[in-house]
Amino acid sequence: MANENVIAFTDANFDRDVLQSDIPVLVDFWATWCAPCKAIAPLIDTIADEYAGKVKVGKVNVDENQATPGKFGVRGIPTIILFKNGVVLDQVVGAVPKSQLDALIAKAL
Image 1: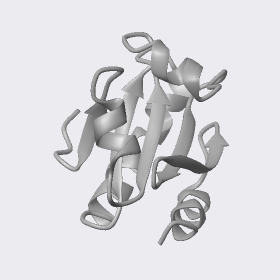
Image 2 (image 1 turned 60 degrees about the vertical axis):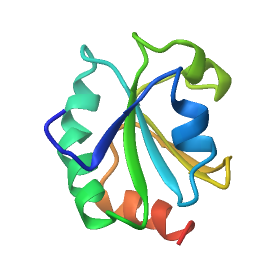
Image 3 (image 1 turned 120 degrees about the vertical axis):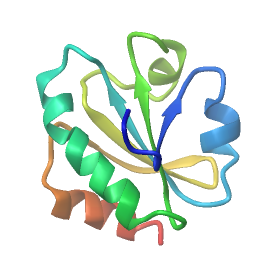
């Protein structure tokens, strides 16, 4: 991942970096072989830059980290889940437009 504002979340760091975060966290569940995931990746980068300091943004590779997606019922990818205070606030599935992601984040701010 080229963007320093996008964090790689793993099964190992998820509790600490997402669930215990003091600011809202937007998590993109993705895989390297997923075309819609690739399509939405630049959007995730843009959001990470725009909301830096207000919202933590990161990705979970579902092939490398299988426990975390299972915990949150991720069945299709990309699934983007917004966490606040350790709980799921909302989520969207699929490559959605930026306006939909902005609206999602607005619920947490």
